[in-house]
Amino acid sequence: MRRSNGAWGNVEPRFSIIEAPSILGLKPSGVEHLPEALKRAGLYKALSAEYAVHVEPLLYNPERDKETRLLNPSSIRVFSLRLADMVGSVLKNDRFPIVLGGDCSIILGNLLALRRIGRYGLCFIDGHADFYQPEASLTGEAADMDLALVSGRGPDVVTNIDGLKPLVRDEDTVVFGFRDAEEAARYGSQDVRATGMHIFDLSYIRSVGINYAAQRAVDHLTRDTLAGFWIHIDADVLDDTIMPAVDYRLEGGLTFDELSSTLQILLASEKAAGIDVTIFNPTLDPDGSIARELTHSIANGLKPYLEETALRPK
Image (cartoon, rainbow, N blue to C red):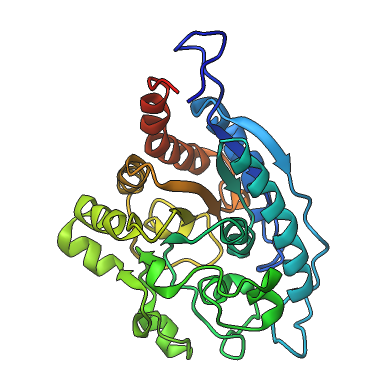
């Protein structure tokens, strides 16, 4: 953390928030209101975060592209390039980007920003593996297949942006907290467990405990071959009983405290490069109570790192 006016306590903000409310990989269901909902719930204030930029969404087309079988593939590519530029700018300014979606397709822009500057890993915290191939997806939504796309599986228009395919290697990816393997197999999805990715599904996490699982993820993501890693959070990784404000609900999931603990362990590694939050749908949270719980959980996960780095001389 940098000094300001020579005082240790008066420091520049470390967290920088990018609003990226794209629904190109899903539908205009309400997830586009995620940034404003978390701002109202106090996320900026809780993290002493600065506002960086609003990446303007592109127009949504509900028709599947005939060639790729995806919704909005060209627009997703354009949005990803714009978002990557903004994330890269935040990183150059020695800030920690917090990217608020939108749907899960925003991960493409975030990983593209890192791929441009080095080899980074991914901690993919999601209730679904998001590993469908376009022809198996019932909807053509990139949010069904964002993990497949960032790992280089799928049409080049969205997988080979800037000629940097894959945006993250299988061996550099941890898939954390998913619980849809049975459902995905039933619909014909590729099996993420058949790859070289490191799999920490919900049943494994339950068997070993959240802290042990998160530390194992960190051990893998802090190997010397990696410059750091990105954290992706889909709100549906949380238990359906406490997080019903998502578009595709699934029984089970993590608690808010478990999400906080996971983030604390990931950030304590000092190798996390940034984080995105996606899929929370404020229109399914009319009194704002779920937004406040989610904000509290994220802030509790990130604040210890903010407080600890504020004490370090630079």
